[in-house]
View 1: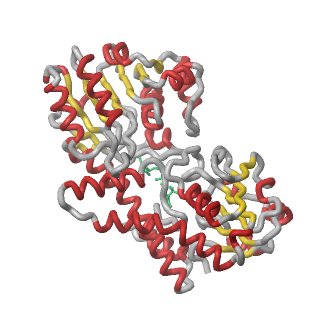
View 2: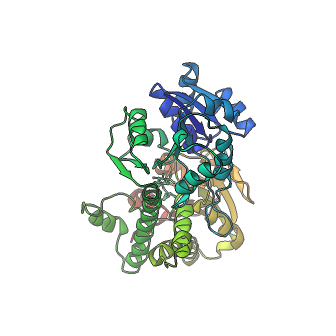
Length: 425
Ligand code: UDX
């Protein structure tokens, strides 16, 4: 099948590469000429394990082309994916300007039947609006159908998640495009959830909002557990073995960040308020997440005297391991707070260089030299498997704050450190 994917970000690139690997002919379009020229040279502008290899392979096989010319790509495709960004605007609403611009352009280009598939995360009602807009702009009703087909991929495992989703959500107003998408995705084994356009949009927000609530729930429990000297890891284990709850997303720590959870939770909150509904639970999840940076800085202050005079090393700057994405990173917020406290901050991240008043390091063990405190802010494998004897040798102080409960307290203490975790008595 000939497919046009508009937007060469995380979602657009992953979708393009995976569809090309299924044997489809994919035109990936972006109006950022620099990005397209990089991709034409086989360079992928984001760090996502396995993506570059897949892109190079299917570009060479001729299944995947990159272009900034939308009109040619649309004309030669029967399926058009919209995968442009929908960032948060200042007022907390989703900024749909990229999405609207694509809709405007499409309205001038469609002159034969196209299935238009929205992958971008858009507020409930947006796909219906797209349909109305195209009709108003004179696109014939026989020439298009609109489908809402949200993605649920995680950064760091985007390819795997796209190849092995736990469901494929298809929102439609009529049955015809369902068969098209079934054919497009025939290599994927996953249950289909067929719903309305609004239903599919809601499922996407509901999923991310639920994950955010689940994380804030365990973080609130961690605070209470800490006060009663209860190990939150035991609580998470006990909770997670109940199949009605499940073991995932019960990792207490610095909280959630990234390009999706914070944005989608805020957007969902606004969508509720627009309808006169106060989303108490969603608001609480955000309040808890926002309070965590202070919580850990205070924890540190209570254990380390004269914190502002200390040299502190932070391991991890991205919002989670295996990504270079620092959007809404809790680690970066922690770094900001430490700088504000007056601390001398040293940072090591396997990929990210922090553009703040800190000293960045290329070598992990160099970063802890003469430090009073080491904070582990994301759970990269090289942090959890560090040579603690070497860290001890290099550090001046002996405090380790494990903000992700990813280290073994026993190992850390064995090497002569004071271990501070998240509700780990
Ligand atoms: C998320 C959703 O998982 C994915 O389905 C959606 O399509 C996009 O948003 P992603 O943003 O890549 O994916 O990250 P995810 O792995 O979900 O983690 C989000 C944040 O939550 C990270 O900052 C992570 O550190 C934090 N987290 C996750 C916790 O604090 N505890 C947990 O138990 C799990």
